[in-house]
Amino acid sequence: MKKIGVLTSGGDAPGMNAAIRSVVRTGLYYGLEVIGIKRGYAGLIEADFEQMNRNSVSDIIQRGGTFLLSARCEEFKTKEGRAKAFKNMQQEGIEGLVVIGGDGSLRGAEIVNKELGIPAIGIPGTIDNDLAGTDYTIGYDTAMNTVLDAINKIRDTATSHKRTFIIETMGRLAGFLTMMTGLAGGAEAIIIPEMDFDIDEICQKLIKRYKMGKLHNIVLVAEGVKEDFRTNQPAHDSSAFSIGQIIAEKTGQETRVIILGHLQRGGSPTAFDRILGSRMGARAVELLMEGESNKMVAFSDNKIISRDLSKILSMKKEIDMDLYKLSQILSS
Image 1: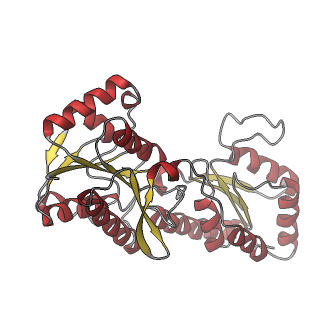
Image 2: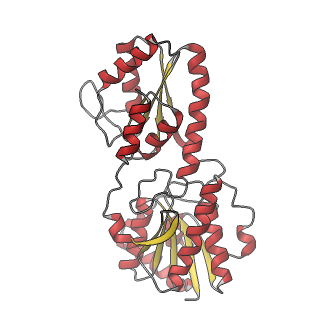
């Protein structure tokens, strides 16, 4: 193998730049040419390629987002779009591909392997941490710290005004980010898609804590919880607003709703995410050089390993019930 490509796709995550930097410099160290592909799979289709050197990735390890840019590409889901991508990769001489992204991005890598016949290695990069087979995904640690910082600041004003705050966090259809930041931030209630909950029980807990002299309450809601709790019909807006309205009515407490939104994606990556991105990027290049394909780099028991990509994409990552139970105990 003489030339490889690297792209980032889907939602950006802090630490992606560290992974790109590692792919480029590891590849160059082993004598490979490395092509940066701009805007994910859209860049493959449009041949938006850039020859990379060491200077191309200088001064990016501390930056959030992805300097290769990212995009969601519907055209790649079509045979015509994939044919264009394959033709461009052949003309450029790209013999292997590293894909950094979440579930949808890695499904694209699986297609590159199986349909286009080009070896592709996936690196899990998503703040949702919802990919099976890896303890952590790139960006998750930084996002947790971002949410935790927001909780700390919201708690200050919540205490000052004796208010209950409903905070919606990201995570797509998974509750990992919500559960862990709720545990770390001392939330009074954590509502995630994976677990049933009783809104009346939560309200009684908040009333009880208020009577005990608690000046404020923090309730974390994962964005994947999408239901109108009055009608059991899909909510037209964020379920956090529905939950907030019910809590205000049942408790009589002054209640505010905050949607943290995309600020959770940004910011300089933590040391953990920089190191994780660097380790995963290097291993992805090594796997290509070893002749591997259709693999995902993973972090398990503090080791960098590889998993079968197709198997990982067929699995659902489960919430750690011990941690969820602990969060319930500590908030009781």
